[in-house]
Length: 299
Length: 230
Image (tube, rainbow over all chains, first blue to last red; front, top):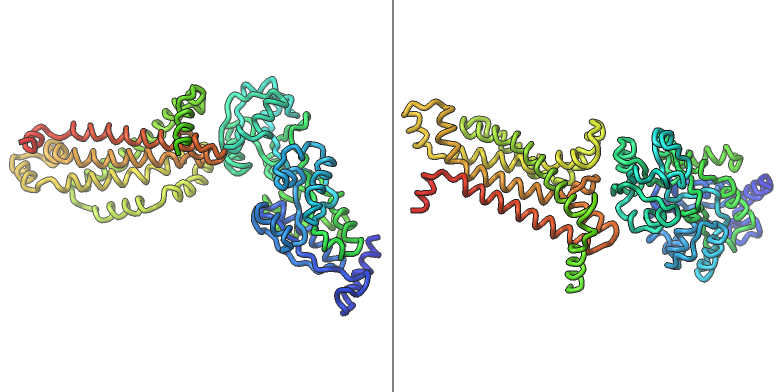
């Protein structure tokens, strides 16, 4: 299959007749992304695989936050970018009931919301970027913590550190209290999964920190991520969203290629890539290329 | 507007907002501890230096200009600059970065006033004191300092009020104090919390102003007071 696609790609590139030249003609794809590290890597994954298979790619990366990039997709200034199922469906519908911890159902609801906008969400990856509660290795050993429900009996002795909005966010303190009956001794307002939170956890000023599940710093510092065993967090799986006009123009290999990436993109793989780019300071472009080669998605 | 005032009043009288580690009582104490430490360090650094410079009249140009540079640096920039340093020194978040930000704000105000106050003491009076056989140390203690005291305390008052008002910025680097209500109110889009925090800071600043104003009147030497009173 891959070989056939490559052969077609070669034809498409040598032919100078341009668009409309039959099944082998591949449209220009403008790949966008929002403004944080992980997005740049995932956008590169899409761009490089498409490029290697004869698509002409225009990169429009690091555009801004979702409030900027989502309208850019709807209005046709970009053709595709990586999204997160639960956050995006909530953003579009303003209805928190559309998102749940069930990835398939959330994916379905997102597709329903995107249909009138002529946008398609392709397969979602197993990789999830959600709120995750982490502790140091020492704390995990001391209280024998592996999952969030382990916190319930000991939380009264522990201090939670997270962004200032945590006490009012349904997937932060209120969710922990409702789903797990976890009540911490105290709460320390810090930043949104940033350097203050990491420094406070390392220095022992807090015992439990809210970080994002694919944050490379978790592995780099040897923190222990507590499993969300009662499914408090939503299915924020990574999934590409694509304009229908591009999908309709493109041959069938477009979906196959992109879905092939998502199928292999797990939380662990994503975290390892984030580490290479965020901690080891490698170019997101090189990080993406290395991963694609290691998964035989790129030669 | 009236709705907001009511919401802020309701927030302030809610007993839940007075108790615990995020309660108003705890936050006021944290604010005073931050401000007091910063003012203490500023005094220890700036007061002896300012008085010595005023007394000898030497090296003043350098000190005053260094102090002016300190005052011109935005506190927010200082905060950002000291944060990595504090991380490296393992002093923890919050308290010390905030204190380190506040000292360059308070110390120059104290330094400049102390220098000017001692310098401005009538030279004839100083000459008379010397003529009476006083040593330099005696001139300083018994003539210059008592006459300079009101202006020196005025500088301390200025520094204290600036420090109390600016200590709010510490909340950005996870410090306690009343700035928490402002930063957290913004993050949660809870306007009553934000406005109540700002009000509490304003009240604390005014109280500081009042306390040091009273102190200022208290340190005016009896002789001078009688003169101005006449």
